[in-house]
Length: 50
Image (cartoon, rainbow, N blue to C red; front, side, top):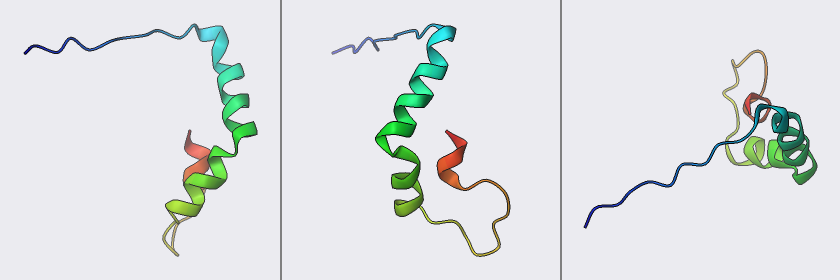
């Protein structure tokens, strides 16, 4: 059985909309809750990397 991956493209002008939707959904807090940073970590938290 061959599986052909389904590829979808997002328009570049949709990126701000997608980032705002992720922010409203609280994805940043969920990532930070489930993947805490090391004590010596400096800079952006992992949730801010999306």
